[in-house]
Length: 77
Image (cartoon, rainbow, N blue to C red):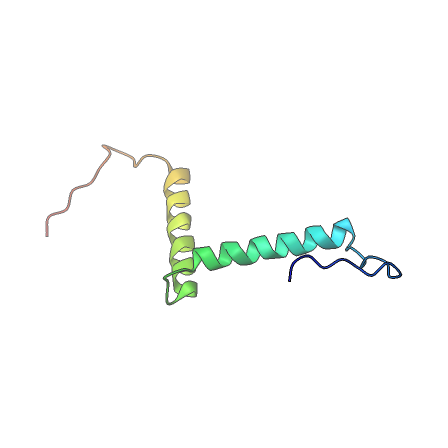
């Protein structure tokens, strides 16, 4: 129980090189982000599609500029 040191005749276990370590850390970070983003959501794909659609609509509104002739339109139903 406690710390385990290598035997005097054995060498220390090899450590992964920096590139492997960075790749593993990046994968773990991406996996955590996906888990956090989908927490509490039953259908992740539909939420992503709705988010993309909303962003697309906002982008279209931003690029189209103000509506011509008088601004807002009012409709009575």
